[in-house]
Image (cartoon, rainbow, N blue to C red; front, side, top):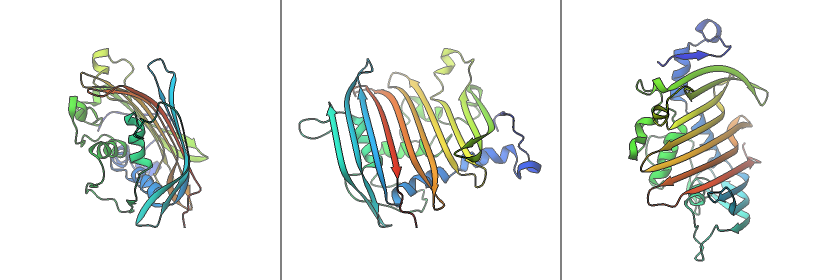
Length: 283
């Protein structure tokens, strides 16, 4: 157990029905955030997205907008783009993307073919997912895990933010907040403010904030801040996910990403991505 700071909140079995240690256990074992994204693929809905690519001076050099519908019959899901608008340097002459970032978001949100969908949570690897996709799922849905397949540059152990060796670099804070008129517990994991530059470089995850709905302990909001630099990898990423309920189903409504990454053998990329999901068809 790391040292936990309580921000104007009392957590005890008497008051809440669970202890601080129980709370941390819920955080580590949470599957509600993952299930919310399974709902994203499982239920039909409409979407609007915008991706902007920037040069090193912050000037927009390419924009890609998509409006369409995600369809699902409960076994397979597929998308139909109603509108695609691109400006600037997005595509090569052969129709392929010039950058990796739009390709990555297509893999996650806009598959080119039909995909299998299920509400079953399984430990089995999806054979259709790339290694990058599997790692992204692992990091995004399992806070504090080090079970990424690619552990280049020592990244793997730096993701284990509950590990006894990593606790010296972080503050862990439980509080209360209101989100979309819902009473929530907040849980923040952030790099200590007084870290030396040397120790700061040991923290890939600089900040994670999660809001847990008090009624059911589902993650209703989450934001991430990743910063890392070594000989192999240089990145600075912010990700925000807003969740809500439709007919009792827990679903992502708004997703935001802004980031820079530079991986050896690839050209650096700076991008901003927004995705809005609406009109879920949930029975």
